[in-house]
Image 1 (tube, rainbow, N blue to C red):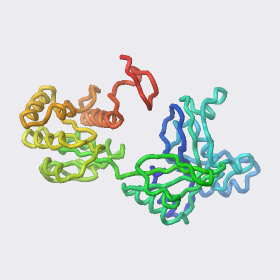
Image 2 (image 1 turned 30 degrees about the vertical axis):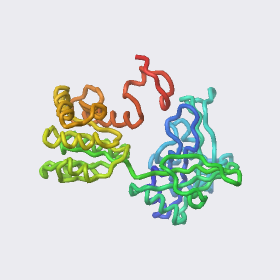
Image 3 (image 1 turned 90 degrees about the vertical axis):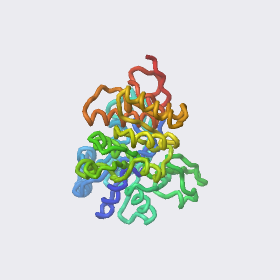
Image 4 (image 1 turned 120 degrees about the vertical axis):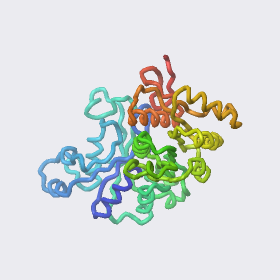
Length: 370
């Protein structure tokens, strides 16, 4: 619901209405989790055409790529969601007018391609209209999300209708990050979506791999900091995608940096004097990921140094080294891809093996067969 916050604000600030489609429920396999949103931004001229057309216009053909942002499925149901979005914007006509704001999509053997989820799951979607006069507290939530801060919104649903609200308006308090469905006293329900500050990815060593890793990390929603004591390497031109460049000794930076269980630490420096105290500090914290670049021989040597430094064996076992998944790549981009793939796998409690070698739900428990 908050994943396209900057675009929502841009449209509203320009005086344009838009439709927000939100995944409100998932049963079985589906491409996106509850709370995922899609924006439908109809071109101005479409309103005039729809008002004078003798037959309903095809809203999917009328809305080009610029006017649809994001997805609520893998592409299976978007055409129907666009139709409902047009109706929410007052541009429906004929058989497309006055459609319910909420709808459920599932497997339909007869219409598996034209309408339905070919992955076999069921997805519920709600569509609401957002206008330039959106209340200030809801605008503030979008603004906070757009700037990377904590934010929350609520989608209220009752008898097929839906509208946007906030947890505070519903007396629900500030929610934890994530999405949850709450029953309301009037018999309706509210999907409450909370978003915390983005997780941190701390990269030590301003190498070419760091530049590629920053690009991947930023795309995945991390706030990426690159730290290096060498000013000549810590240049914005070398690291354009990093959110923060820090000129400091790595261990001093980490000691001064608040972290949590989502934080990732990637050590790319190849500098024993800086690396060992940094890893001692990192392994003493509850972090989501700690990895260090180097060969298997380097890693064995590194483990011995950490043992000599008094790091307990169970903490040393948390260190990912050599860093990354075994993709066989050699370039900076390929190395960064292997690292960020391992970061994502660790965040979801997965081993990073091929899906073809497992059984069970792709987005739930997966059992490796070989």
